[in-house]
Length: 303
Image 1 (cartoon, rainbow, N blue to C red):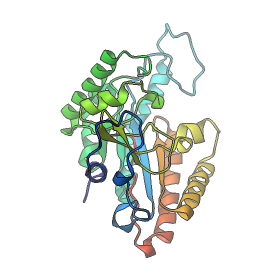
Image 2: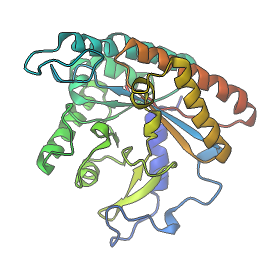
Image 3: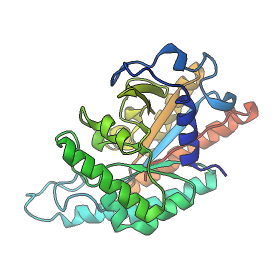
Image 4: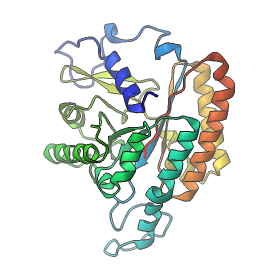
C-alpha cells in the first residue's frame, strides 16, 4: 500500500516537473505554464481530497503555562495535572487514533515536534511503520515567529535529526507553531530539503510559490476545521463537530476540486471521542457518495 509520505511527495514532485524562471521571487504566483489544466487538478480523476492532520506534540510542552482545561497557575510552579492531560495524547489518544485509521485504511500526515519524538521514539516509529507521513513541526514548543534566522534553522535541523533518528525517514513537509513562521521560514526550509508547508490558508487547493527561483508547494490548511478551533473553543459536542465536518465536505464536494484539511490534536479523551466520531461519520459519507463513482479520498493526520 502506498504510504502517505510517498503520495504527498509524488504529487509535489510532479507539480514541480517544470523549471521556474530565476527572476521569480518569494511569494510570486507560479507562471501559467506550471499550472495544471482545468478539470485535471487531482491525479487519477479524483474529484476531491480530504487531508486530516494529527499532531505529535505531547511531552514537548513547557512544565507550566501550556493550554489545558485546568485553571491557570503561576508559571513559576510546575503544572502537574496539565502535564498529565498532555500525557494522555501519547499514552491513549495517538495509539487509539492509529487503530481507527488502520481499520478505515486511512493514511495521514503527522506533524511531529522533535522533542516529543525524542521522548517517545517508539511511537513516532510506529506511526511511520503504519504508512503515515512524518513531517516537521519544530524542535520545541517555542514559537518560530520571534526567532532569529540562526535559531530557526537550528530548530528545524534538530527536528529533522530527531525524526530521522526515530523513524528512519527525513521529513519533507512542515507546519509552524500555530502557522506563524518568519519572513525567512520558507527559504530555510527549502535549503534543508523540505518541499512543502501547510501554513498558508489563502486557498482551497494546493499551489506552488517560488522561493529563490525554485518552486515550493503549499498544501493549504483549513484552519476552521481544526479540532481545537472548531470543537474545544466552541464547546461543540462530538455530533456537532462531525456535522460541521460533513457540512464542509458537502459544500466543497459540490464545487469539486478542493481540499479539506482537518487537524486533530489528541491530548484529551474528549478530543479523541470527537475525532473518532468525525472519522466514522466522514467515512460513511465517503463510502456512500464516492464509492460508486470510484473517487479516491486521501487522508492525512497529525500525530
